Structure formats: C-alpha cells, structure tokens
Length: 439
Image (cartoon, rainbow, N blue to C red; front, side, top):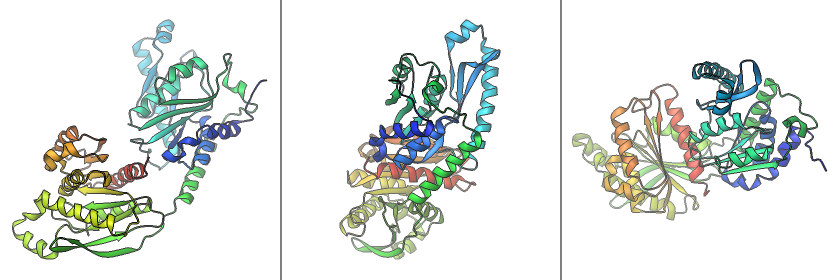
C-alpha cells in the first residue's frame, strides 16, 4: 500500500515521533528553507526545541537551472559534484562565478529569514537538520559540511522521505539519519505528498517568529531576588550576591579579575543574561575589604592565583554544602586572573564543578593544573587581544578535557566594542545550558 503524507505538517508530526529521544538533549532544530521549515516547525514544537533556518542555495547548470551541480551554504561551505561538472564541461572559473552569485543569494536570504536575530551558536549542541525530502542530497551535503565546521556535539539529519542510496552516503557524514520513507523508486519528492504546495518566504518568517514566541513562553524571564551573603573562607569572610531564579538549571560562580570586584559592570551584565536564561549566579569578592585596601598599595594578593583558587574552592564547597542552591550543578565564570583561579580550583576539586567559561582570561597562570582540569571549558578571547589570544591557544592545548576556544572578531581585552559583551553572554549561556543540564 502506498504511504503518502498529507502535507508538510503531517510529515513533520510523524517525523517528530521518531525524534522524541532527543528531547532531553535540548537540541536546536535547523530547517532548510523553504520546504523544510514547516516540517522543522513541527519537530521543534514536539521537542520543545528552538527552531532556526540554515540557508543553502543550489548551484544550477546555466542552461538548466533545475539540474544542480553543487550548492553553497551559510558559513561558506561549498559542495560541487565533480563528476557531473566534468561531464558537463564546466570549468573551475565558471563554477567559481556561479558559486559567488549563490553566496550573495545566501546572504540575502539569511537577512530576509532571520532578520535582526543573530545566527545561532551550534558549538557543543545537538543539532537536528530537517528538510522535506532528499533526492541526490547536494544541498544537504553543503549544509552538513558547514554545520560540522561550527563544532556541534551531535548532528542528526531528519527527513520524511529520501532516496536510499543518498541516506546510505549521508549516514557516513552525520551521527544519525532518520528517514521515514526510503523508496527504491523515489521519483520526485512531491510525489510522496498529497499537498506539496510551494512554501512562500512570508510563511517561513511567520513560522520562525511563532517558534521564537513559543520559546519565550516556555522560558519566561523571571526576576530573581538578590541575597547578600557573607562567605566564610578561613580567617576572613567575603561578601557575595546570590541570585537563583525559580526553576534554575544550575548556578554559575563568578571569579573576577585583578583590580575588579563583585560590582564589575561587565560581569554583572553577563550574570543578568545568564539569569534570564534560567541560571543562578553568585558574584563575590575574592578579597576582604581590609585586604583590598592593603593590596591597593602593592597589589600582590590579587595576583596570588593559589590563594584566589583556594578561596574560590572554599566558597564552592560552602555553596554546595549549605543548602543555598538545593544541590544544583555548579559552574565557574572567570575573567582575567579569575579564570586561572577557576581552573586551579576545579583541578583541586574534580567533579564538583561541571563547566567553566573564561572571558579574556589568563588560563596560562593555572600552570601545570591545566592538565588536571576535567570540567568542559570554554575560552572566549577578543580577536584584537592578540597577546592574550596566544596565551589562551597555548593553554587550550594543555587542557585534557572537553574544551573550546572561541574568538570574538574585533573585540579587545575588555570586550567594550558594540555587541562584543552580548556575544560573550550568549556563548557562556549556551555552554552552561549544555554542560549543566546533565546531558
């Protein structure tokens, strides 16, 4: 008996049933516009996952545009069917011209579909790539290549219908292929739908807006009351501010850099963004008021990494054992010398901290402890902070566990450029959401 889908909505709902196991991984659904978006919308809705597009444009043969000889994807990935190009006598120069024209189309479509929203970060995430069907797979190959270049943790390709040979080939490129129908005689993709009406650009934008609104409803921004704490660390007590929003998935402890404090406007900005994303935060002073006053003269304590790490560790122990955070998983956010203290503290307490993010940090100052850090670590450095970038590259090579080094283009050490600190907060939020979730 011939099985056909009523339309893309029906196909997406059926496809979502086969993907429910991924709901616990907090995936990001990426749909290939335009036809893949109604399918991806249903998948994202069923998994309570965010939805976005990944734009790919087919490179058609000049005298027969429907015949694809390659594809260009956002991120710059280019796929060329070499055998077909040679058979058709298309030179490298002609292919380069065709590809460049498609790159401009990709940019225009990204702007139209995504609007003011930034491209989502794929690093460390489970990505579900959705289309309404795959025949030869040229455009999908370009999408896969460009997505893999972004460093996802896992990439799943999901489609209602696909050619079996193509599924077999693409299975080598992704972690899993989910295809509901793989008919030997595929014919056209539209043959497997009762209604295969073309999806218009406005419908793509409408579905994306609807998906974002659903995510906002699922994750409303709830203000968290800030509680002032006095944190005992041996002979001194340190001042701290703890904020844990209702339903928080974890708590991030901030370790500020030299010459800074828990009042740092940059760290408080990032902390506010993390709370909006459903994470608790603790900002505290690494030195007591008396020590700060004395250190203003010779500035030796603020560079004493073992001392700062010891204090951060004791605060972590107290926080975990005091009942203040109800056993929520803990992460570290370190800036400048605070990043070194965070890495050293984690190495001395393996397993207690689940994730670390460094902003313009000096991880090199953690020394030999880098080899003992096991918590997944994200190093964020400004592209114009060249000296610190070099130090982070060297430190990253020594980290033994899961690690990523992300460069924010055009940003300097303090990330004062427009949008730079927002990018830091976004990257940090996604890293903590991934690694404090227990997945």
